[in-house]
Image (cartoon, rainbow, N blue to C red; front, side, top):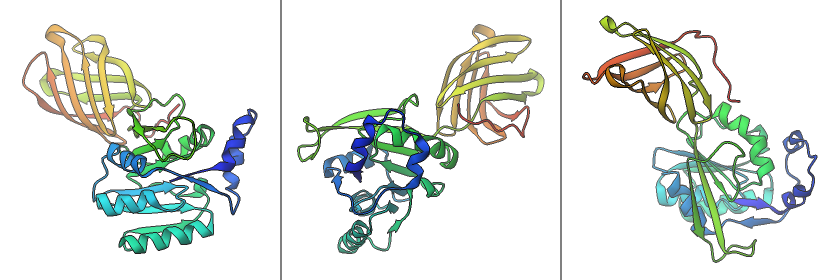
Length: 286
């Protein structure tokens, strides 16, 4: 994964319009390679497995997707604009014996369809990450992992962050790198209803900011705030109410329903299915 040196000058352009990034990179520009220790740390943090498909935006010499295939058994796609780097990456994949599992194409990263990726890797500056963020949240499926070298995603807080020793890093005074991980969250904001048999109707009114969920629960004529909610990909766990009305829910989120198990007032868990109150209302992230 490579960081284009030309992006360094953009840091000073505080009035830069994000749409300018969509024009694509210029040709024949130098690149800064990601140290191999950081490459491996990124893929390990994302827990890359053989069933994964890794897309690397700005793939340069191809080392991210080549390592993903060679060491982790995954398939991959590198997006690069520089033809010389594309040739270099393609040759390196053949030499590594993974040419049947990785592909490199010339394409504008803003025009790339990300929907097939289960893991997305980045080494781009903050402005580029922020410009890409809506596309990432719209196109990647819940549970997909996004890994970025050195740069974050603004107010989308990472699910994990580590520091990696990088003695061969070519930029920066400190020979260290920061690696960020995000798990793309399902969209749960809105109203949900579930019939719990003799237990009556359960209503959820949820609010969401990325993976952070708040809201209220109405159950047995009692309304109480969500005390704790955990959203990781399409897996949602909620704890609400106390004492005899205590509610514990764990479910898988689909666009129009949540299916899982619920425990009410300390009773044994039972299956539940909550439906969106307005199935056609599919919220966007804010």
